[in-house]
Image (cartoon, rainbow, N blue to C red; front, side):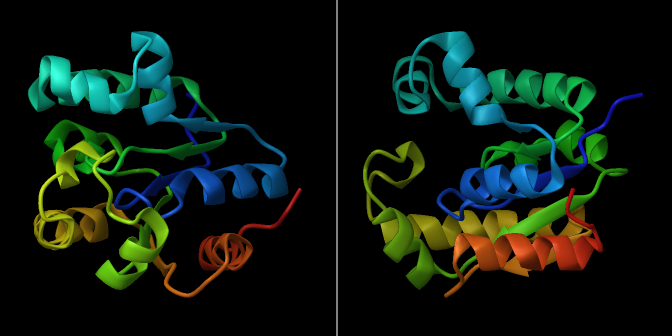
Length: 171
């Protein structure tokens, strides 16, 4: 059975893709991002999918993308920020090395600007980000083997913290 070596979860803008690529490089393995899988398969942005088809349709695409990636990918896998909302996804991750990359709202503002390009943050982004995190934080924490705070850290520092927390050696 194949399985991802590391699965990264956390809110939008936390750096799952950046850290995931660095982890894959340092571990000598591949990197995969389920949001990128969805964009490639659909030929349009996630924001466009939300606008044109709605969140429930996107979440179904996301469930399918996560199932496929967990079944096929053996390297570092990054999941979209809301993938953890699905109970089936959480169950699927139960036996994996899941890392929750966390950040507070001030860090989110610095990194993403909490701009309208993020479909779930289009109106009053700070409040919406806080509400999203209140709804999701416990899901991220429950699914994770380890939690790595990213606030005030460079991607390289976060990557090293993940490797240390999982006690993994570089390739």
